[in-house]
Length: 218
Image 1 (cartoon, rainbow, N blue to C red):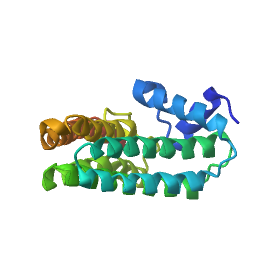
Image 2 (image 1 turned 30 degrees about the vertical axis):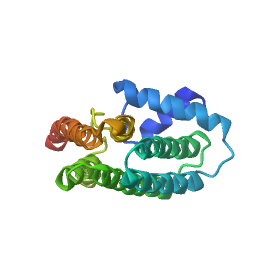
Image 3 (image 1 turned 60 degrees about the horizontal axis):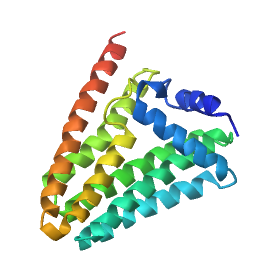
């Protein structure tokens, strides 16, 4: 297993030179999943990737039931994120990372974020707002992929709307809605949380767009 510093350096290489230290949230998240990966280094990364997607999809069920079950939905969202981070930490930290696995992990991330948007919708967020949330989850990685096809080697700066933020906004929104379910405020909390996520998404896309614009101009 690589040391933590070696793992962070390898993660940076796999992500176009992005510096994890540029975001405290991303750096802390990567350090946490690395510590967990050291304890379960024998697990196959692909199995963890699939498990993460299944858990994310399962969150839609308690979200649809509503009420206190929304707390479980939030927990499942958080668990899916742990599994999602763990598969990458296992692959990179144990030297099993591959281009095929990297693409698979990215595809599963997008499917998981689609499940997050669906969970917010069935929990009470307006359909258009949940769709906007999902679209803003996908847009940064789409922009990075297209910029890469245009010859940009770097992924652009880490914004306020990276994967850990998207997961946190979804999980805390659903869980918080479950906590206040007895007061009849669930739909309000879900709507406000989804709207706040969209606002962060717009800011994050603007940050990334500015960085990629400079890179494409060179």
